[in-house]
Length: 77
Image (tube, rainbow, N blue to C red):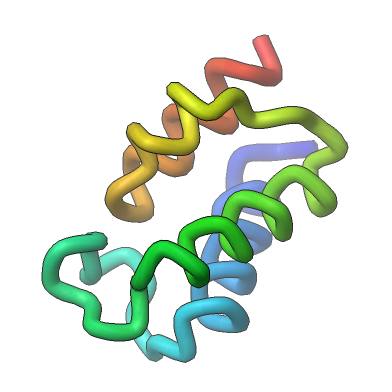
């Protein structure tokens, strides 16, 4: 999977789960929709889409689009 496809998939998940228009511009503290339940839903969607397991420690580090991309890339390596 190329990086552009990966970016678009993550973007789509953020839009679906958090109901935001610009997923790259938000972070966990500024997005009212991003509560603990949405965070879990986001993690589950990412795990399903990329066929991987995100540890609890890694899940806690996902606070915005870029940190999500870094975590996904780190797990896949």
